[in-house]
Length: 446
Ligand code: AMP
Ligand code: GLY
Image 1 (cartoon, rainbow, N blue to C red):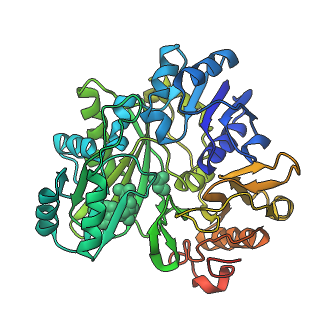
Image 2: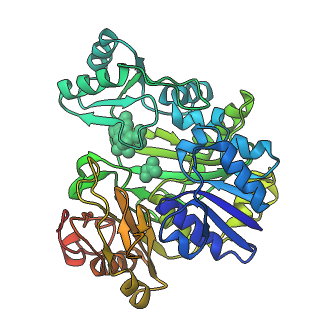
């Protein structure tokens, strides 16, 4: 099977790594990729948001499967463009990707399918904003209706901060994202959900839904869940504290009803349905849906999946998931720690050289390995340099979370990137030892 992966983050590196280990994959291509993906796939300098160009590339490569990683190409209709050429594609249509692209649309689908989620108001005026903030009280949760790379959400005790963010969301309305009717200009204000968060992914062909194993993400920038929301600073799987019936419950109350509702509307969702969940004292509630694999949760979920990945994604892309045998998983655990550049998530600095990658490959593989996100090869020196906010996902497996965590941080400590930061408490609470005994220096570090 010839596979083309679209995207260039650590999630796509994790996808490419798993695909490269699948014996059915005879050729692996990626656009645009990064310096790490270049080691397992052939890179193509095609704009991932340009559906016509991606479809042309896939046709030229005679790809049997295209896997679209990030949300922006999905919302822009890249999967539709590839599907229109008759090429199997893993990723939903632009219509179905609105589940992630518009929080207001997601709320509407959840209401229709009776999926448990936070009560919310969609606001477009200052008066509506004030009424909604008053109705829920502190802590306030204010979300930009449209795509914001995990950074459009403000959770705060301060009503003025909440109000300012909501006003920024409603004015001025943005241009519609390509291929969608969403113009932004809306703030979603909702009830605060208390309780641990779980990310549960499901692979679906629009009808059959196959859940993966749950993971936990660390969204805040700094240790102790302090600082601003980010795309995600680390993750682990499995979740030893979760109810063993959680996956079955979420399948029955969230995943299958949502997939059924989108099919009923004539916009079936095929690809990866990501449920971000809060386990509250009143039961499981959906915090958000995403229309693609989560980053960095994918790094730990795929580290534990032993079923070959290409067959699974191809079955989803071709509507044949019902015939697939049950997924197989390793008994062990996986932990990933994100190394981010100086000043992430505000104005990340790029162009800094990254050292120690070869040391990890020599001394920690195969249990620990580095997945690249914002990296590239410097044109003149050939050195690997930082090229984005989240730079690396240092991932490790082990017999249990304690072993995986220890290995991940040992590898993190071998890497140097000037001014970089990482959290030292990823999976600390679930491992058998406190953060400071296993972690490197506290973030940020110079
Ligand atoms: P989202 O982009 O919707 O996943 O939100 C990002 C993060 O904000 C979530 O992972 C939560 O940590 C937090 N968050 C979002 N909605 C709520 C809510 N209703 N109650 C509490 N925290 C929330
Ligand atoms: N890790 C959160 C996300 O992928 O949206």
